[in-house]
Amino acid sequence: MNLFQLIKEDFSNVKRNDPALHSSFELFFNYPGLWALLFHRIAHWFYQKGLRVIPRLISALGMFLTMIDIHPAARFGRRVFIDHGVGVVIGETTIIGDDVLIYQQVTLGGVSTNKGKRHPTIGNNVVIGAGSKILGNITIGDNSKVGANSVVVKDVPPDCTAIGIPARVLKRGYDKTPLSHNKIPDVNKEIFQYLLKRIELLEEALPEEKKSKLQKIDHELEALYDNFIHAMD
Image 1 (cartoon, rainbow, N blue to C red):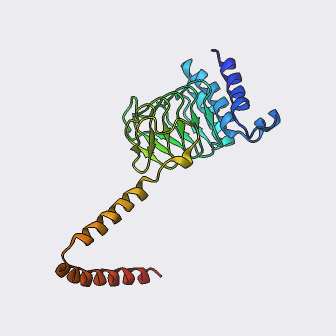
Image 2: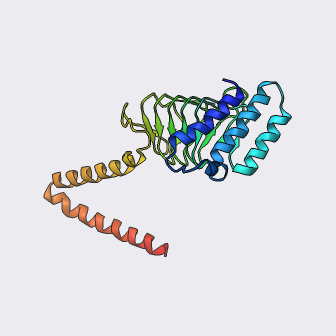
Image 3: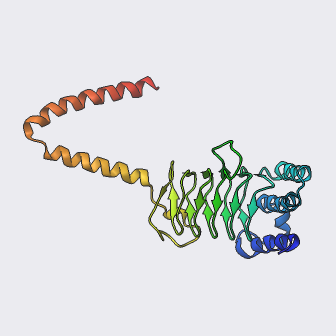
């Protein structure tokens, strides 16, 4: 597809898939992600021609108007949608596939100052939740999702969901629906619940003569905790 066909498809993609859009007029004022993509398509076209100054100027103008920072060398597939978009940062060697959905405050960044491929590769049909950071030359597989505010520093296989800091990969095919972030489990909460139940089980298994000694230590720990909490008032 040529440049104009890509841009036309980007606009049609929003009209087709965003239920919040009620008129074409709204595209001009409520979709900074769409306009950031427009500026990037043009800047990238010039960048591929071997130019450097003009793409940088176009990218700077796009960043000023949309608050979205995309390096002109980054490679985008078809029907990419940056929803809301403010605060999104996409680095130079990033590669993004087709039908990718990116929410606000996402960073596709690098962890090295060396030249070469140092930014992520995002597969097709990927959803990247708000505030997520995907860092380094890693790959997010096709049909995968990254939960909001996650920090991903390792590859994510296809058909998986990655959540947490650092992100943990849930089992394959966890949730096929496109936007069900509310169904992603709270892994940290589940771990704490497991530990509390395990401690309770161990306490029940202790002999009676040792429980009284442990109760004394428990009271001492409670006193230390109370002193710490009061010191923060």
